[in-house]
Amino acid sequence: GKDPSKGWPNPPYPTDWYKAAETHSEQFIYWIISEGTLKEDGTISGMPAWRTLGLTEEERWALVTYVKSLAGQ
Image (cartoon, rainbow, N blue to C red; front, side, top):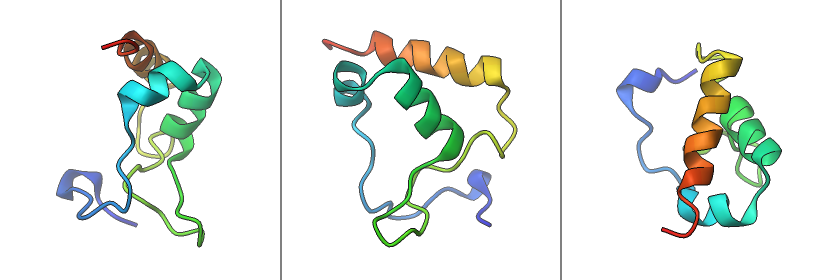
């Protein structure tokens, strides 16, 4: 797997968190943060699965709260 400290070069489609905050539920955002995102062919894109990279459930929910606060900005 990729080392998140080394960065993720050239993600195919970065997530627009401002738009996600307005259009997606807290549960969906939590799932994306936890499980990462995949390209249509099933390969990993620019968003790693933070559940497996050491963020606790509480930390992931804190990120959801932050992302949701971006709505309307």
